[in-house]
Length: 246
Image (cartoon, rainbow, N blue to C red):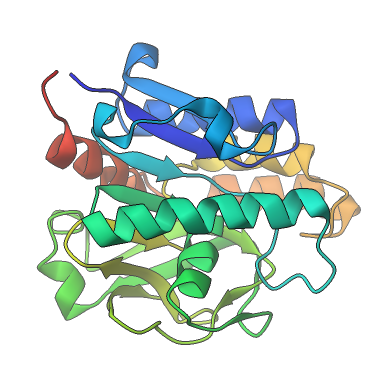
């Protein structure tokens, strides 16, 4: 089979490795079936990507925020690289699934509005599948309402032009949408279970997603939450739908 590709933009080695491991595990991919590039390490052109060589593309989370007002040269370069990549992906309607940072990047690319109105603290939230989502192959076998983990400083302030809303939340209304037929983004993290979230929180304990002294309490809340693995089906459905024989 053609491998899938995970594009990471995390400036932390441990976080980048953890993201790869969680995506691979919950998408049910072996390591040879999931390649990874870290876009924060070098410009996109240096990787010589041939998108036709991959069954589909994941874009992971990030410490960057699209709505940041003071952006470093690195962040600006990463965003420019991603905009160029999204131009190809959206125009060609290639299989794509953006996670958390992916929805902010896509919303901005589509000329939607991303701001701090709908940020969510780290924890579990209720996700409700819309009527359009219930008819979508990535969500068809998920419950109409399920829990998933979130933790983000910004959100999409409305559905961008041309997008189909597939899942909604309470504190952050836009939780998942589709562009065209094959391009998807989520605000929640379908790749995280309670252990994954606890590991991620330890890495980012001091960067403002929560008070550092809340770590143990939040980890315990994650364990006691109603997140039951339903959210992982989204990843498995994506890889099952788009796997291409080599």
